[in-house]
Length: 425
Image 1: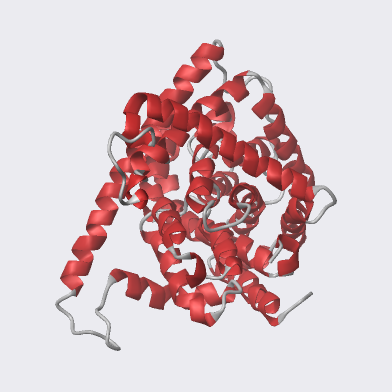
Image 2 (image 1 turned 90 degrees about the vertical axis):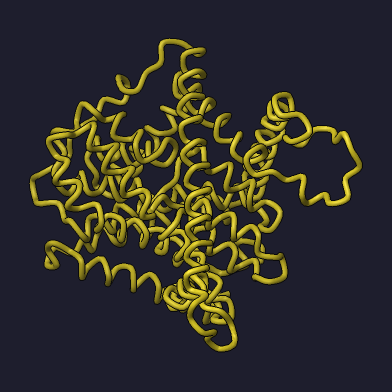
């Protein structure tokens, strides 16, 4: 059943397209056919998982798989860290909530998924899945082979791995294709972090794993569209074919597991450091803001400022105005800090304090690497692979940040425009 809240979400869709058109390097070259194609792909992918016969079986399978991975990871974590990792407690527990230690019960998942992803790539399973998505994007959105492959790889591996996979074609990419690769990298998340996000939300969001997985997949065509609006492709350029069979390789299964684990360890260390520093910075900022007098009876905090700035955007996604301030704050946290902190805070919102529909929409809006910290990662990571184009990357990365951030908002708007009955609400 179509409701006013669904029309409200269409405002967010129109807003994202308008902002990117205003940022466009050629406003006369608006890609109307690509717009229709990208929206159709997004709607089709969401309907495929949540609206087709047997979809609930697939959703349950995704959630069960995540639960299985979490349980298996817990065995390893408990073996290494004992009771701190959730094992048998050596003393009587009076506060069960204090047993959840983020560093021991969420971050280890990234190690396991990173190693598993590398192993599945070595066994060509993930490569076949990636090729399938690459061909889908190639056929439906007219991407060149190299760009289509980079977009597909972004969904499962991440924003730095995708240029490594098409490294042989980086010098051939046009400005538009390079910008597209950056935007899609910022609009999606890596497979290693998807499971961590699902674990954070599973207690407060039904089918959390399925929503997180779909969010990253569906935001890829949104990133493609917005990138093409901001930096349109010139006629006759791009379209290089990529050889799917001769890319990222491992010497053996053990080599894949070892290198995947080391890559995951790098991600875990980076996330841990960023969480410590940014949470500390927020505390410092709130301390500095305490010198100002209270506003409307409450102290001035970073949380309140971000909520006030981003609450109108949250409303356009289809969120009730009563919850828009909290949702806007989470959008601000995602952009200014990281999506990891935003997901942690979304998961900490009490079950009755936010509706399931708002929590679901925010899951899609937050599920992307578009934050200020990722700007540095993008410039440094891609600058190493393309030193001759480092200046060009620096010149476009801030526009890419805006487009990547709005891509997840576009995805949230698409989901919000669909009847809530489709998702069981």
